[in-house]
Image 1 (cartoon, rainbow, N blue to C red):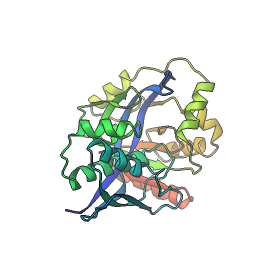
Image 2 (image 1 turned 180 degrees about the vertical axis):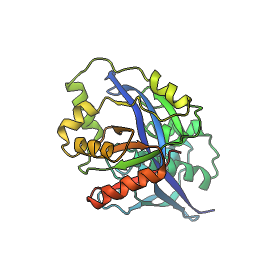
Image 3 (image 1 turned 90 degrees about the vertical axis):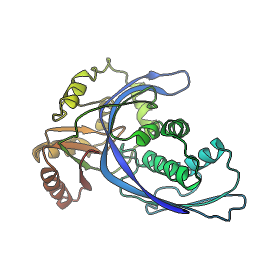
Length: 286
């Protein structure tokens, strides 16, 4: 097998609390992350006649770098270094559907998919925990993207506790108001505007374990990002008007998601937003 295509799902943060900056420059977080059925496609092709070290990346989104700045490139290099693979000729094609710099972990999920593909194509057979440790050096969301499902994440995001919750019955509508925000800038704003401690995630965890609609949502980034992104607050209001039971910004934003009782409801709301010129996607939690 010399070629493989893997789906890379987006994630939303049902809960995200950010602690103070650590001495190493990272922040401690507590987050409940949920993968959803909105996918990039990551296709990896390995040349069996490799000589030297060669990586090439093509991306359908011209705004995403296709050189060594791309997260899949970094993940590939980290993979080869971790397993002592000195010769490779690799082509990675990214078919983007998840908006970039939106708080949906599109890049991190692409990187996780690349690690999965390389693990199979090169016959390494590393377990998920090993791939998580490699991915954590590249991006804090990559370990969750490898674990998938519904997880409680701590540390910088690398300490993953899968949650044994019933299959989610709700649906998700994601909308992107445009104007991507860098994660680095979002954390800088939090450092400049400290706030009281966040509420504990206990109420949300109880809702998830009971199999109901999550309502106790929280995101620390909202207080610093929403005032600086005029498109996001009215988008939250619009989702509520369209029937969302709960609405929140995901990650460091500015993508907004709303939870609906059924996929048909989320699709109806999606169609309304698309008619207004707002990029939107309806999906089920995974």
